[in-house]
Length: 366
Image 1 (cartoon, rainbow, N blue to C red):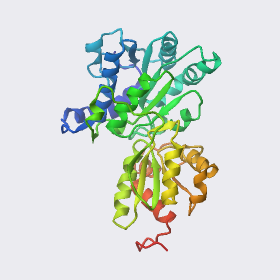
Image 2 (image 1 turned 60 degrees about the vertical axis):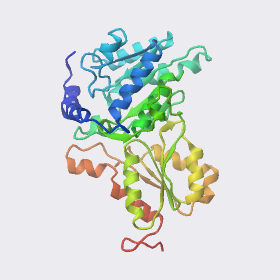
Image 3 (image 1 turned 180 degrees about the vertical axis):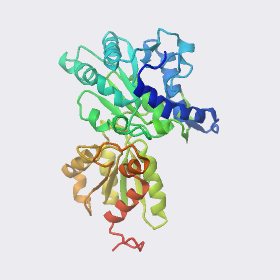
């Protein structure tokens, strides 16, 4: 099905097509591309359970705008891999109805920016029906697709929806970083009896990560609601999700050269959030910096800070928690402004130095 919508066509031309060459490279045996991790997760779950099916724009004949569904139409047929018209409200509603009827749909949004067209179905139908039916109606559905800022697509296509959907009771929300995250969390989401929002990142699709033998197992899942400590440290805790986890790891590497030991937590799950993991880390490091690509107001970092303020870890803080976020403006189009509107590694490094009271011209805390 050809794209008939100019905006979506522009995203495909600007973003999807330039990624295709990346997946043509062959990763080392111990590594897997994020795109392939998502593809294999859907493939294995569709093979495991014939109630699972995929629908969305361009997911079938075109193999997905970002080639996440490559090969699935040929393997499972047009009844289980379904191209839809360009109407998010329509096909999201169809998917929710199918879930209520006992199927297990994977509803792909070409980007989560377009999920705004379907937000009534996601929130009022999928998230609330189990509660409103006193538990008699289950909605085992996955809403997935790229989330957050991409590159050069300006204000209407560069938003992070982690806080939007994380705000809503009845939804589970996950935000994977690595290939293992993507495989394990997507498989867990498909098996979950509740509606789950899987927030991927388009700029990560062409990146490869090491994977364990365990992660390659068809039975591998990542428990929703459990964070992962990506790097252990003793001086300060960095908490992030999705692409900015990589920025935190880069910042931690730089700061290690200055004698600063950073503990990096990959949230993996936005709702439920693993508060215990964060609290235990703060009790060890006594300092906290949160990092996210979304806006600062009412964001993921703000929620983390509020929970720490209200919990047992607050008394362990030796300095106020600091948030590193995207700028509080619609995303600019010009690259120099876009770079300034998104958190960078240097912003994390400066925030850590500020929190630990480190002078810019010295590596000793004062």
